[in-house]
Image (cartoon, rainbow, N blue to C red; front, top):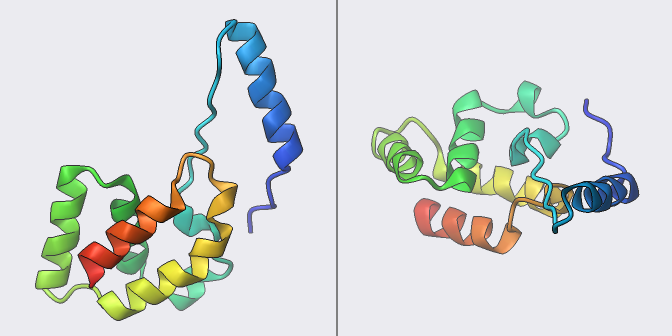
Length: 111
């Protein structure tokens, strides 16, 4: 299980990057929004997790994949929405993710 990020250390790091670059800096953490759900590997089907990752990225080909997985019955939209609801409160840990936009995509694509 990944340990919680120390927000103050991250903010200090971002400030230092900005000073070094002599310009504003923005840090994008990777690892996927689904990584915040404790125990997800033991309780979910991987394709549902990948579906949420694709929805978060929102590239055209990812959204096409999501629609195809739903149309082919490879994912349970109800379960995917439930998984999103479980990770949503922890999305603040991922500054590059806009929770409102992510939620809107989930609702639009999963009904």
